[in-house]
Length: 272
Image (tube, rainbow, N blue to C red):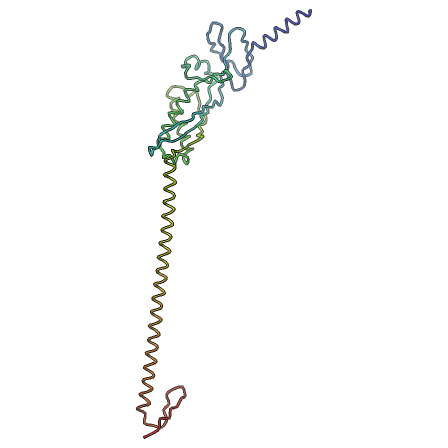
């Protein structure tokens, strides 16, 4: 084998290698023949497929992510949500790739910058958008965050049901729905903040009223006790006055020499 032959073979190998497409993991290939006919036999991951005659299209089929962003759904309180973003993760049955590409409207699909075709991407995007608007209508704007997981399940169920109605339930499988962001309208947030401020002021005033009431009760109790003390003191003085009067009367009416008035004290009153 001379040098020219070796170079020719090497060039042929390079051309052959460059004229092949490898199907990567998570992808399925479909051959487009030179007459533009689509071969319905899917090319599986790991295979090398020549593209010198015809071409090969590649389709990611596992964990395809659809981002649905900048939605403005209407909440149950009739406010418009400022921003609502979610992602839908779905997979495609590898055995149905050629069938879907042939039978479904090409507008249902999307093409990546790398040239891969995302089967039913635009269709899933529209289904998810409609489902998000329907689910959001059940909740007040400020309560959506607390019901995020419930809304995710509702959106997933709505999309899955539509796929089943279109006989695509064995072909397209929605594995997950993730709500990325929920931002209520500015007016709703401002109203909520004002309500919180008003409630705090009300609680503060209620506390002040309770404090004033307790203070009034305390003062009243003290006043009542002061009156009782004064009354008892007056009673004691009256009793003392009565006792003194009785002693004086006893002395005045005594006719003996010595009067015992208690406590061992004797009063010499003289005699007539």
